[in-house]
Image (cartoon, rainbow, N blue to C red; front, side):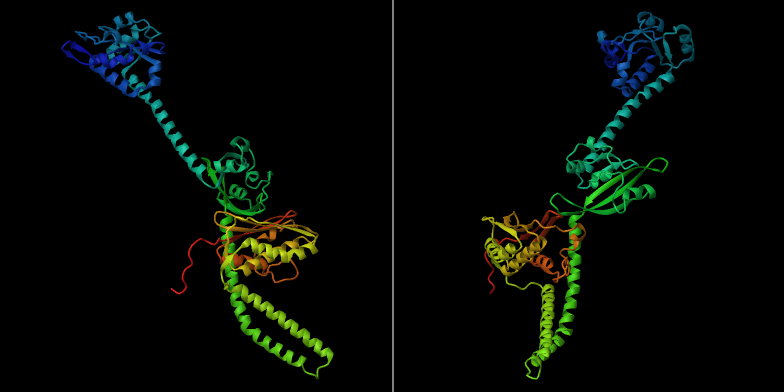
Length: 510
């Protein structure tokens, strides 16, 4: 600041030190300022507050003129301060490098005088124009602030999208990929660069074709209607397990309201679909239970009467041999119908068998000894691989044996021309695992959902309750059943059985 006297000193020198000789080197604009002390102070405060680093690289103030001042202020730290002059002519003579003069007083007479005096190489900036350009310098600062805020928002949005379990693609109007989230890249084990420009169907379905094979392509519907769309698809993974996905597409509009991009999202709904199938099966079992109760009452009573009279007649001496044969057929069919009714009622009732300790390895060995002859008759090589460290199972041994026999029979029927059968036991963190794997013809994709449904059978004989009964038994003891199959390769059914825990048994007398 200015000092009218050494004892009445302001801090002008300290303020202007920022524009020292070091800052003025290689400047694009070398400036001399003309004005009285109040005008210079106002100008300097505005320049200091609103300029920025980029502006200071272009601008350098080298001198100031104080026309009309009777006493020039003394400066502190002369080596780094801006020199002041009693007239603008003295300032320009002492600093020929000045190429811009800022007139800070706004006096019209002084402005007119400067226009006539300054050479064409020196630009005159009047007070109002100087204020405008100084304020314009703030735009760069605002741009930097906006850029920082935009980058922060962009990084936050990218982090959120990358953390989602859903696979997300950003598509153009042709269905080509412009961007993808981390979930897609992790599944594809590929870089983002390799996915750019590919059709979205090749990412979501693995079919590299410009025409999506979806029954109802949601992308095409979104382009056509400008509204969100969705569809459900399925696929078989590398292990032969069925997976279900729901694909959503959302439009992104341009300023004219036309769809210019589409966001496609794929979500794995296999777990939910499995629960829905089980719920449907439970509802079906409830209906079958009601039907079986009705059948037991309405059919078994007359069936018992028919069997009784047939037995009485077949023992009668007045019946000839041909009639006796017909009565034998009636008895056999009555017994078969009674067996079907019992099987149906047993299937719909909760399993009431006593739960006990089951040595799964011993049970597998015993059961496969029994099933060895049917395997040999069909030229099937049966192998067992037992995990000696597997825990005992908390279940009913007869029911687990029934499950194993059902699975082995199914495998044998799938290997009519011979093959290999592998029965293994293993241990996971939560379950004891029993697996039956064959090299049969596999299960077609279109019937895989129905394979555990009651009364569903691919053969012309049988009740179709084998696999349904197996799942029911395992579910009731807190286990799980998993099926994997590949056509032409084989089928593997895995039973996850609850282990017997090392806890004291409760006293039933309490």
